[in-house]
Length: 174
Image (cartoon, rainbow, N blue to C red; front, side):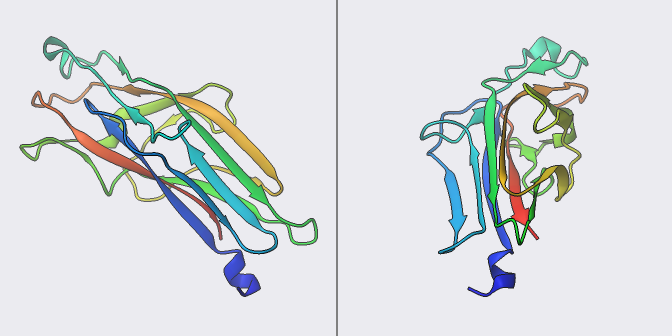
């Protein structure tokens, strides 16, 4: 693998945000060549992709009372490179390509979803409904991890139902 190709790693990880649903299969990505650099991302714990559910009572739909999601999601990022050739990794989120949609085609924008960071290593924020929202960056060699808890703003008057969508996180070294 050429030096320029070895630095152009990207990995996407699906995190499903379901208003109701069941657990999915495990996901852990590790990308590496025979030497450094190395880049890895892990979302969730054990052998499960984390899903977040929001239970909104019909009487509270769209009334502006935030609804906490559960469970929290653990995110871990690692980057390793030699001191002679340091790299910077960038985490971004695509919250536009796979919107929250119900069986009738109604949607809720992902900008209604925010998160709170437990430690602040991957800062708190909200999704902005774009394809490449920057979340955090840091130089090699290192590891950061955090636990995010999610909240649904509940400011949109929507039809009751089950809305399914996904956020795609990308951890890359350009």
